[in-house]
Structures are given as C-alpha cells and as structure tokens.
Amino acid sequence: MTRPSDIPEDVWGIARETLRGTDAQFPDQNCYARAIERIARAILAESEREMKVRVKELEWYNGPGAMADIQFEGVATVGNNYLVTRLSHPQHGDEWYVLDRLYPSLTAAKAAAQADYEARIMSALVQP
Image 1: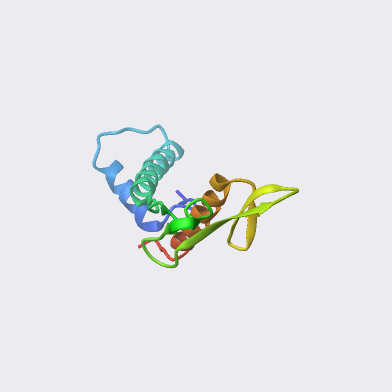
Image 2: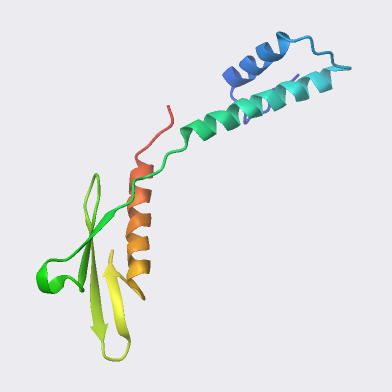
C-alpha cells in the first residue's frame, strides 16, 4: 500500500488509524488503500477549509474639502494606505490613477487597490 505523494505522511497515518478502529471489511488490499486515501483526502479538505483566511477590505474615505470628488483614500489595517485620484482629460474623460496605473472608473481603481493590498497581506502568511 503506497501513500500518494501529495498526502503528508502524518495525515496518511491518521487515516489508517481511523480505519483500523472500525469493523470495516475489504475484499482486497487495493480497496483498503482506496478507503485510507479517501479518509486522508477528507482530512486534508477539512484542514484547508479551516485554514481559509480573508483579508479585511480597505476603508474608503473622500479627500478633504475641495478634493472630496477628486481623491479617495483607502485606509489599510496594516501597511500603506492607497490614494485614488481622478484625472480629467478633455479627450478621454475621467480616469482614475492608483498604483502607477490609470483605470476607467473609480470602482476599477478601488478594486485594483484592494487586490494589491490582499496580495501583499497573503504573501506574508504561511501555513503552520
């Protein structure tokens, strides 16, 4: 009975012990190994569900005074804040600037800032 390489040895052992403690009967070694693999994959799936994390959304505020419709600040819980600025072009209309890029709408610019923020936070996390 060979352990699949994508299943950690400790999880495989737990699955084997779980099955050993039952009255289950198997016609052959292959059926027994498949049952252990199914239990191990269920353990891994549950572990992954428990490990899911979500990054808090940026809190957006209008700029001060005359800047209220031109600048929006995305306040981060950790790290740097994001500043989205409206740029008006006679030929192109309004575009929104954040992260050294222009976006066609305020919604798109805020989404880009949020995606950047989430990527930065997630890159700092590791599984225990």
